[in-house]
Image (cartoon, rainbow, N blue to C red; front, side, top):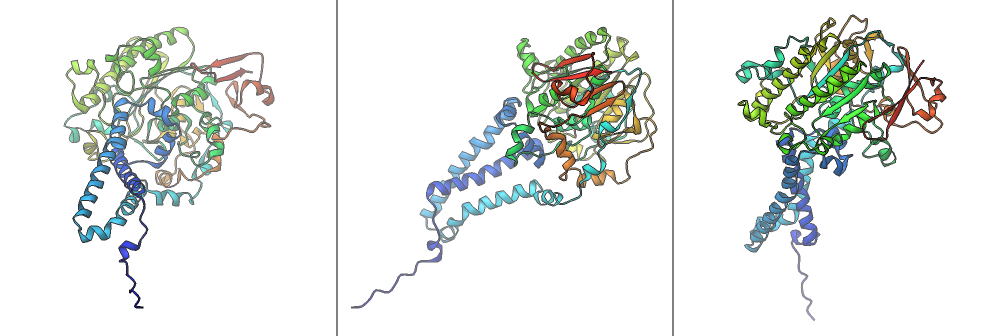
Amino acid sequence: MRTKPATVTPAHRRIFRPSPLVRAGVWLAAILLFCLNYWINRYFGRPDIDQIVYHLQFGTQGLEATDTLIVRRFVRWSVLIPVVLLALVLLAERWATARRYRVMLRARPYLPSLALCAAILLWLHQLSVVDYVASSLGPDYFSRHYVEASTVSVQGSRPRNLILIYVESLEAGYADAQVFGDNLIAPLTSLGASSFGAYEQVPGTSWTIAAIVATQCAVPLKRITVFDENTQGELVPSFLPNATCLSDILAAHGYRNVFMGGASPRFAGKGRFLQAHNYHEIHGKEEWQEQGVPQERMNGWGLFDDELFSRALARLDQLHAAGRPFNLTLLTVDTHEPAGHLSRSCARRGHAGFDGVVRCTAAEVAAFVRDVRARGYLKDTNIVILGDHLARRNPLSDALERVPKRTLFNAFIGEDVPARNREQLVHFDLLPTIIEFSGLRVGGGRLGLGYSGFNRHPAQPEPDRLAAMRASVLNPSATYRSLWVAAPAAYRPSCVRIASFISCNAGSDTLRGCGCATANTERIVVGRGDSTTTRSAR
């Protein structure tokens, strides 16, 4: 009996063939990664791994507090467009296969996997993952340079009130007439303020909550929790519990800390940070909505800047009349990427486009300063105006790239401004700098990673500090982690001596454990939450 010769199956037919559903899933994953990468780059600029991972910690709560325009664009680019592209790809595959194109028949089994690999490689490149991994093996910059507040004397007999204004994405470069045709922020640059010529951005400070933390606590904000399920739930609700920040120091000197922002305190853990660090009042989007603010005075993020400053001025009058030192911290939103928010009042004044938003915001901040001056408050009150971070992707990004050196706007306004000791600042320097600007004295001029920019101090930043920070400040650090990790049950809380006050790092139930409870104890209730701290005067 003659045997039938064996049939040889071509190589491209012998490979594993996934089910149509699996194949479509791989295609969808690849398309989704490409679309998300495009969405982030187009509307926010190049992604930052620490920023992305940090925001993932807050899940849907962070999404709910975001500008609705951003949410709609996210849904468009992460759901609608990927589904449409998937359908087109599958139809194109079917059409090419039906026509028996040889190249298509050979390549078809590999295409979804190749597309997914390409998308992953693109993300690895965009996030500089290789550099990120390499940095984890680098030196612990933070531990070598961090100065704990417990080792520093902060003293002063007549501190001044503080108004601290964070202006969203405000760069000094907007004043460059050679790039923009004229000075977009002329109302601010004409205030006659004292300014540092080179306020520069370093890693761990490039988004709003990171900038607030860096300027108030003199530490970067970086990822330490997402891949550590054992501490994730513990760390996020307790925001840098072992760090001593600007508002903690001011509260210990009798200040009332008040925060007012247009956006929601729930976004990116901002409210948790403020609650954890002695802000007595926290006002934001949800409160404005409860008060019945008309929709035309709100944008996707929250309250328009003009309305925020109007309310801030009214609260300022109350704070000043109370006769107690205060810190009024404001955070604007109108210049937020990707396109800004033009209020009706700005439009009525003839402003249009994103450059109009920048011009109008500058005018509103300057008008607020003039109102403060007109009331005579500058006799005992100082004002600090800061761009929170460099602008991300917006309609003027290409022009900003032509500015010779991109730095942040800063202005220090008061009747008796201390002498600057240099021109360069980074975010971390603002903690000791603002404290000394407020009339207190920082022993040695150092707190956290910062060096005071005012007065004469023996310690000054190293010449290569900027390069060293950019290379190593986000490297793993046991000291940095200790600022986040809550103390064990047997922990004996440490007392931080600040002038005539003792501030305990733990709650009121353990105050006596550090020996700093006295008869004069003030209970501080922060915002609407249940977070409390206690301060005792000795």
